[in-house]
Image (tube, rainbow, N blue to C red; front, side, top):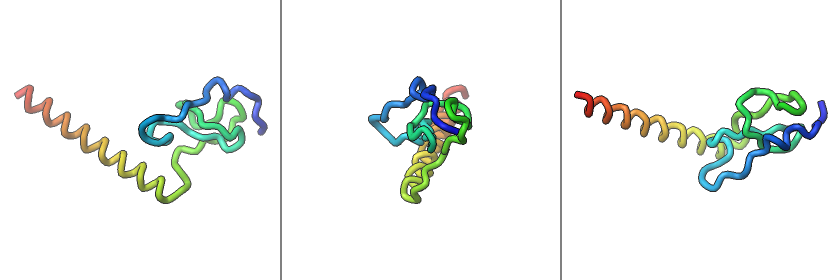
Length: 85
């Protein structure tokens, strides 16, 4: 399992707002690069990509952002239901 250089095509730029995990980026431990990739495995070295941060503080931030996003989505759904009635 070594880096073959294919991952460079899928390299993800650092997001301006938010963190990498909340924008859907995943790091490969072998290639040492963040990828914008929908699969679970690195397209380059076939190593499993990390989907959650290792740091406990970063994990808490990610959980909080997900809860806020879910709450905002539920509010939007309630508004559309009220508008339909």
